[in-house]
Amino acid sequence: MNRQNNIHKYKMTLERFSQLVDAYGSEAKRWPLEERATALKLLEESTEARRFQQSASNLDHLLDSVPISVPTAMLRQRILAQTQRYKEPVQDAWQWFIHWLMGTTVREHFLRPAFALMIPLFFGIFLGFNLANYPTDSESIRFEEEVSLLALYPME
Amino acid sequence: MLMQQIQDGDHPAFAMLVDRHLGALHGFAQRMLGNHADADDIVQETFVRVWQKAHQWQPQAKVSTWLHSITHNLCMDFYRRIKGETVNITSVELIDPHQPATGRQQQDVALQVQIALQQLPESQRSAIILCYYQDLSNREAADVLGISISALESLLARGRRKLKKILQAQSANLLGDF
Image 1 (cartoon, each protein chain N blue to C red):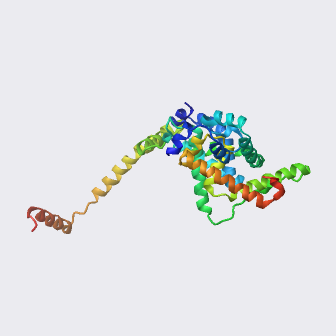
Image 2 (image 1 turned 90 degrees about the vertical axis):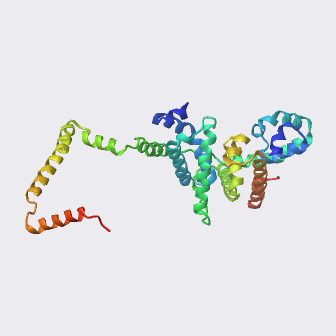
C-alpha cells in the first residue's frame, strides 16, 4: 500500500516507465492520469522508453482485434420485463385483504363486500342451529357436574 | 440523480440506466465468459440485482464501477459453478465465411486472442478486460476487484506476459516479431 501511495510522488524513471507499459500497454490514454504527463515527457526524451513502448504495442494491436459484442434488443426487453414484475411493492396481509375485498371492477365493488357480509350471517345461522340441538340428556348433565366439582377443589 | 430515482422505484429511470450501460456490461461479460448466451444471462441477472438492491448503492460510488462489480461477482460465481467444464467459445460469432480472405484472417486472429484470454487465470483476465476494454481507471478497476493499485498492476503485467506467451505458442505468424 505504501508503494501505491508513493507512486505519484516519484519522478518518472525508466524502470517505472517499463512497469507502466508492462501493465497498461503502449497507449498513453490507459496510463494512470497522475503519471501520464511525466511518462510522455520521458517518452520524448528517451530512446529506451520508446523501445519499451514499441514492444508493448504488438500485443495491444492483437487485443484491439477482438470485436465488441453488441447486445440484442431482445436482451433489453427481457431485462425490463423481468424487473417490471418486481415493480409492485410487496403488500402486507391487511392491504391484500382490502384489495381483495374491494376488487378491481364495478361489479366486484358490490359483490365482494356483499359476499363478505354473508359469511358472518351464515356463521350465525350455523351456530344457532347447533346450539338448539345441544345435548340435554342425563349423561351430559352428569359430566357438567363433574367438571364443576373439579373446579371447586384445588388439585394436588 | 438517476440512481436516486431508481431507488424510489422509478422504472423508466431504470430503463435509462439499462440503455446507458447495457453495451459496456455485455462486452465485459462476453469477454470474461467467451460466449454470448452466458453473457446475456449474466447481464440480465446484473440488472435484476440492480433493480432489487438499488437501495444498497451509495452516492459516493460511481455507478459504472458498482455495475462492473456486480457483473464481475456474477462471472466469478459462474466460473465456480462450471469449474472443470470446458469453456464454450462461440467461434461462429466471430468467423464469417463470406468475408474476404484478409477479413477472415483478421477474424481468425481475433478468435485466437479471445481463446488466449480465456486461458488466463480469472483474476488476470478480469484485470486486463477492465483496464483495456472497459476503459476503467486503475483506481476503478482495483475497486471492482477489491485489490490495491499495485496488486492490480502486478496482475496486469503477469496477464500480459502470459497472453504473449500463449499467443506466441499458438502461432508464430500471428504475432510477427514480438
